[in-house]
Image 1 (cartoon, rainbow, N blue to C red):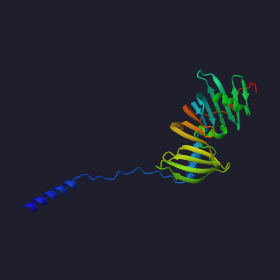
Image 2: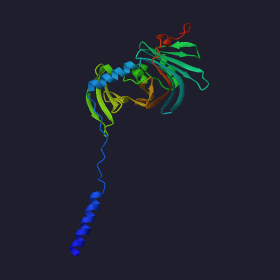
Image 3: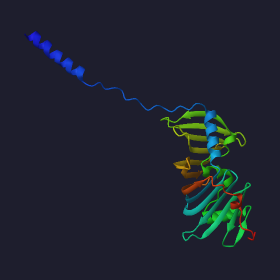
Image 4: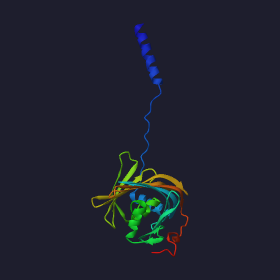
Length: 259
């Protein structure tokens, strides 16, 4: 009788265990796969070419040692050809107009009603903004593109620790500078860029807050960190319009201004 009772209890336990729902292993999210670096760079080139011009209102914050300023500006960018930045006071008065075109930078000073060129531009820019920026180095950055992309040659490509960003080390074949690029593994959009000249890091760029503009992903926040000056420039975009067919005339200053 005791043996039968023991067998009965064991049998019930086995039955209960067998009826318990089985816990299956939770599948981890599939890691992204990128076919080849050549195809990735082709996509980056195609994306850069697709954004032919940009028009936007921006709020720019510049910070650094003994420097903390914020400006309202309008921004016009036409490919790598031309860029225009109008800077306003809190009362919407024009503080200055910067134009980069044909690898030259001009500035209109409304206080003296004159156009400034050459080295004097940097002095005036510093007076208005608290710093100076070489737009020739950064022009692609403001429309979400990687500067001098066609000159970059890949040396090393690897994942970051959680495989969300593809880190690509490249060399600019024209200048010899090292350019490290971070690409989002899922969207294939640029996230960061570090430029190093020799052993000295020159600047870093971060693109963030991507939003759709006319079916294209556009970063509504761009951060530039200039290492040599220990300065940070944060540009936040609003009312972004792209591919409006901006004429090169928009990058000309009015005739009659005194030089």
